[in-house]
Length: 84
Image 1: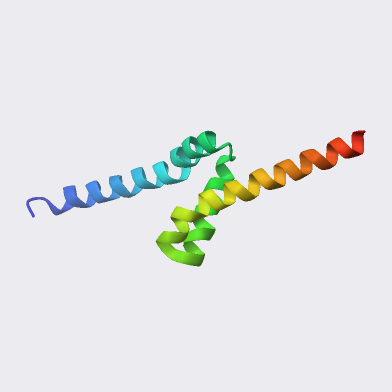
Image 2: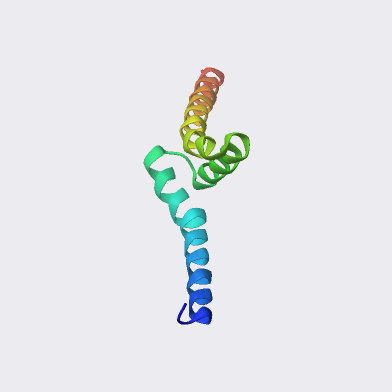
């Protein structure tokens, strides 16, 4: 390597950039397109990854979206019945 300190700074920069993208940008973009709040996208990826590794990360967000939509529709129906 020509410059180990420069390589270290580059590695630190990449880690910070990846954390910002994964924790701030990605949940907002994916959450808006799916109709799922960003915090739920982040939690689904974390829980899915903890339970099933990389496959869990990939499948966690769609599964959480399905559960979120079902729960949202159930709450909407229950409040409509109570109001009537």
